Amino acid sequence: METINLDTIHKDLEFLKRAVAQIMIAVEVEPELLDEVKQQVGEARDRISNGEFISNAEMLKEFDIE
Figure 1 (cartoon, helix red, strand yellow):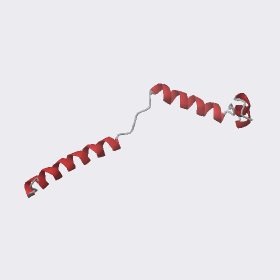
Figure 2 (figure 1 turned 120 degrees about the vertical axis):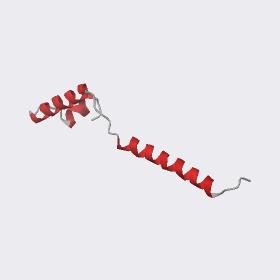
Figure 3 (figure 1 turned 90 degrees about the horizontal axis):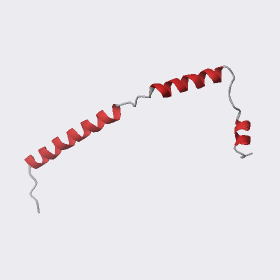
Figure 4 (figure 1 turned 30 degrees about the vertical axis):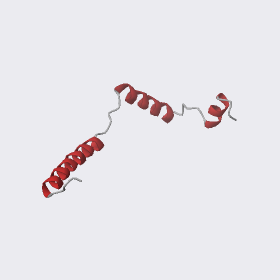
């Protein structure tokens, strides 16, 4: 059985601190939308604000889900 001493505990804690720091960096990164997607979202918002959209009933009818 492995002997556990303060040095082993210290090394394990340092490893865990580095791992947690890397996880925190990964979690804080926000994905960046592609310019094409941003443009498409903007165009869709414009169409909706101009009343150009398909109603839920029309969508259901189009996919024969009524």
